Image (cartoon, rainbow, N blue to C red):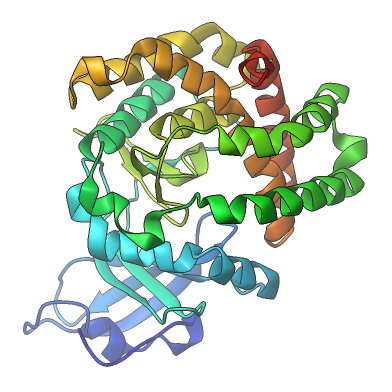
Length: 354
């Protein structure tokens, strides 16, 4: 890798761009940058490349840390920036999941100085969290998640990586205190926009958060952690219809949490309640192909799905209060909270905590 490092849009140079690709007679002689995507934690840029004599790629996507100070601090404290870079550098080759080609992945540890340069996935279309998933998209998504989880199930090499371990018992008390503070702030900001049901779920769940965290099963596989429509790129005609991006919350955790989060936040409630058991069953059938079916029963899978509906509710609160506030962000986090509240109640998830 070239000694040149670039961590800001304004520092992009032709020399740096040329350093990423195999040496050849072709050279990049010009470039143009345009913002793309709806990311909360990062700044995504599409860069058009002008080559000396026609070559590829003609465009790439670059991801830098957010320009917002509060969000950058969150990214550093949670390890989000480092996780994504290290995922592509150390782990991506071990997982059975469709990913973009990476040309550069670099970070200065402990800072927000990071950059990813990756394949431009156009004309694939990004899912829309606000619009919600179709049943067909959901089928593809749960199957891709099953491949991710199954291919890393019980992996000793991954479970030993400190940067992938999200849940530590020593951190639970601090997180519970933080969650209570953030929920109070969330209500102060959004209460007039929330349904009575959404507020009641929070008021009933927060006193049980400590119990919910302590009683969680042991981590078992690699999880995406933010497996939702905005991070999924679809091409229904392609051999592999879905490519998964945005690995800032990757961890060694509970696979079913990705499924509960995706279906709870990404499907409109009526569609979710109609099809969720079918979709969880489809997830389970693909997962079984990677492991002995007797090591994980469908009953365990289904109850895990119900239990993790609280995780999506919690994610909406924490993320909303720790990243830069935007109009779309407000709409997205409120929709996620309402949908997960409905999911919790429809699944009678509180019964699993009693």
